[in-house]
Length: 141
Image (tube, rainbow, N blue to C red; front, top):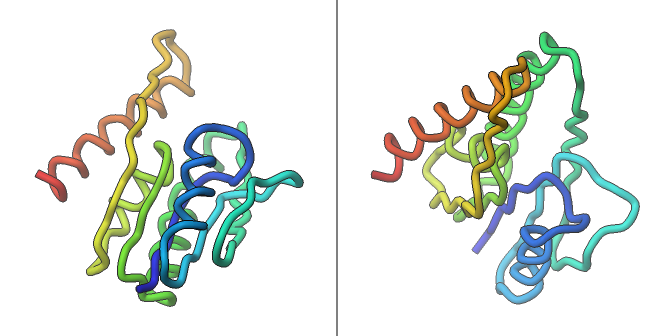
């Protein structure tokens, strides 16, 4: 069985530790696609693909990057033909749902934080939250 795991990185927090454990314990071909790769990463099983998605503060580039990420994840799924695609954390979960194909899709939701103050960043987070809810209802309910 070919399993694709999509995450932001393998550095640090709780979701990354879960990915580390899952990738070492599950049998099959494990491929971990990370948005960026930091120097110190947790131990993992399988193969890591660095998608090199760089964050930006420019709002126009954020919109362009969103489309690039969607295209890149869709192309990766088409190229690898995974049986199962597992994603962790909010941005990878949203990309996993938008690019859903024939593979079984598993998303891991731990929390969903929305900034309450008014700014362009909070607007993007609210928009992302609405898109996420839409795809949850469309594909999973």
